Amino acid sequence: MTLSPALAALEDEVRAVRADLDVARQSLAGAAARTEAVLARLPEVAHRSPEQRADAAAAHAAVRDLRCAFLDRHAEAVYSELTAGMTRELRLDELCAAAAAAFPGLVPGRDALAMERGRRQAHKEGYEIDQAIFVSSVLRLPTSGGHLLAAMRRPTPRALGLLDGFLRNGDADLGSVRLERRDGTAHLTMCRDDSLNAEDNRQVEDMETAVDLALLDPAVEVCVLRGGEMTHPRYRGRRVFSAGINLKALHAGEIGLIDFILRRELGYVHKLARGLHVGGGWWLPPTGKPWIAVVDGFAIGGGAQLLLVADHVIAASDAYLSLPAAQEGIVPGAANYRLTRCVGSRLARQVILLGRQIRAVESDARLLVDEVHVSGDELDEAVRRSVERLRGAAVVANRRMLLAAEEPLDAFRHYLAEFTLQQASRLYSDDVISKVGRFTAHKHGAVP
Image 1 (tube, one colour):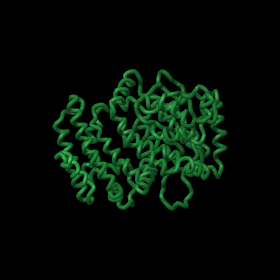
Image 2 (cartoon, helix red, strand yellow; image 1 turned 45 degrees about the horizontal axis):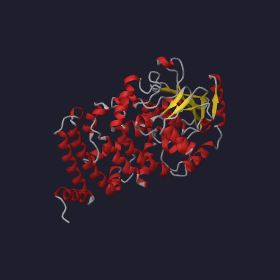
Image 3 (cartoon, one colour; image 1 turned 135 degrees about the vertical axis):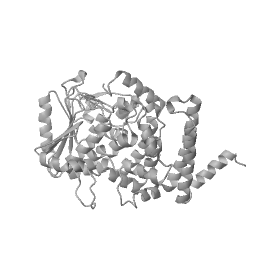
């Protein structure tokens, strides 16, 4: 049977990107350049007709098929080249920047990303999907993916720069997060009082810095995570844990796949669970520390996700938690992985797929909350008791072994590889863009 010219050309391109790496590199760069030429002839996304949108989608799909074929064959070699044989530990943003320079057309370059940052989510080209294809391919590789996870658990340069001052003074005001050490306990207080601790890039940056400082401080034995008092009119003067992702920032195009979503999951949330990666041999003692989460008001979305990596959860009697990501059109981080482990399949589906809220006083909440108390004084006393119980010398080793049984690193890595692709696709789907626009028309960020 004779192939059509178009199909024959496609098969030739697929063979080329699966050939020797140098040949494949050049072939992929050429295919990506042709796609960019197609896009350059079209108006900007906001002004495209339905037919022009279809043309752009077809151009993206064709070159993305080639990227997948290229990475199926070369992902390990690409990662090895970028990290000098895994002797360099690159964070996600550094890895993608290095890939853009060394493998043109594999991921978007600096200029394309800069152009995207100035656009609302609905008006973006969707280049982050190409980053997702690359990162997902790396995460699927046992050795390279494990190396990337370790790199993302390194202390950040910002934390290392602030460490001496924190060790000396025992406090750090990071902007959206305050950190204070008292009697061997690190108190991390989320204080985005204007948006009910709805997370954006700034808060993810501050949270990771605070988590690093708490974990690096040898005087800290136990860590407490809590929301501060709010100035938002609806909750003025009351503590609130977290309203989840800042939908206003998402609508504005300020929530990125690499610098927010994946940095959060592979960065500070993973550090809460597993601690820091500081190099050295496997025989070194674990770097994780026990975390107590105190829920005032509500833990929505990303806030509820934090409870799933906490060692002890204390809640006010009027508090509730929810994971409304499906209603927003996105995937709630690693909650689909961790929540099922905690509450079982049926309840996890009710919470994630159907949007069920669980109040702290419900019987089902016992699967997610350890203690419920009525007043602020009772909560404070419960924190004090929990801190004392978690100071035990064997706590760190035992929590590490619990995590090894509950969340093997390879299983978590596989989940993240699939999550990366699914979340990137969701961020640019029509339903998410429409829903976020409606939410932000009548809500401040993610205010419940």
